[in-house]
Image 1 (cartoon, rainbow, N blue to C red):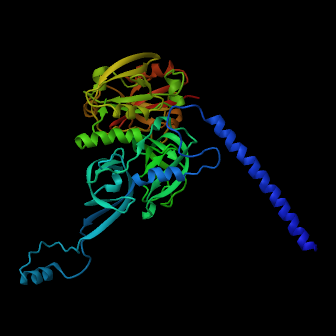
Image 2 (tube, rainbow, N blue to C red; image 1 turned 135 degrees about the vertical axis):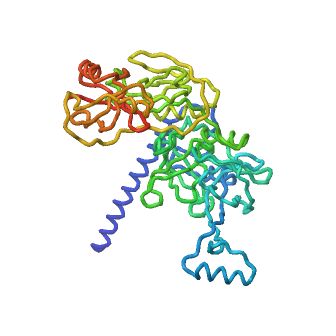
Image 3 (cartoon, rainbow, N blue to C red; image 1 turned 180 degrees about the vertical axis):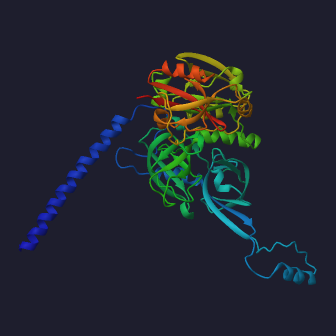
Length: 485
């Protein structure tokens, strides 16, 4: 054996040993992980063997026929650029007896879109995203067996991005619904859809997080996954390993327009609640209590004497709202509704939004360190806004907060619709660092109303080194925590 042959043989031997080590080490790891992580359950058995690297083929064969491709078409007219003058066009058309309204338009051009969906009943109801069918003049649903149907949009809800379609068909395959509340972070999930029009494409990954809040959306506790989702996947189902739908793939976070490892699905329980209302009435109604809220930060929790930073801090209460009638006040911290905990401020609109107008909500609040329960009869919801503090303009001032204030004038009180408060004229120091701005109106300190400058100064001195100011800025009210020193 020459030297080269000897080296090749040696490398091959080492490679074989290394491969055997990896294989022999890896197989028991997966088997052991499965044994530890799996508990006895009465739920349906998984369609995927999880003792080794998962094989999703059985699952896909079972659920694939219920996943559909959705294509949309809308017609919009666009104005021509350039071309003959209005006078010339008018004269030309007049000769042929054609009316002319002065608007030069090119022929209507169809706009096409695509997405995914899934059949939820044998008689042809289909779920998808609202944005997939938005502004569509024509919606077509294509099945795995190549049949296609014109679909009717039964209803859509932009707030949750859920839409219900109906096709004229019978005895269709349909999905089974799972329980999104039992989904665990780290478990395998599978998406089936039509990315870029490639029908019934399958991607898999794990659940990355639950109850995610996305910007400008407080009603959906999104399931975050690392499943590859791309344009065309929208509206498609997210399955657990038992072949049950646990979510509707809705959004991705991307800087490029393509998949970057962050995908978000609407929990199926949220989607089905919306679907039921759309099928019954064609619209969705939600409860409203009429409060402006903000998160409870560590600093605010310390200012209000709370044990931990949790709940939704009430910054404002709408005049004549159910919350005002029930006695809820600015400075109250809502920590529970009907026995359900409100751990984060985003939990409150979700819980209230899932209730119906006319329902009575038992609201647990903490006010000045003590708990109480109030009953609120809900009305129909309008979008609730979350307030936030902006960055200040720093200016010199006096007192230990760094504030220079003056009382509101009578005309200012009338304009703002408030009984009293102090206008911030100058701000520096701790107040400036906290976000107080000139022009802000201070209406409360640690849930106590502000009446005049002297009383305010005494309250500040008695508050120690942590306090929270209730500030009206424009139409919004927010609590701003301030740390002194």
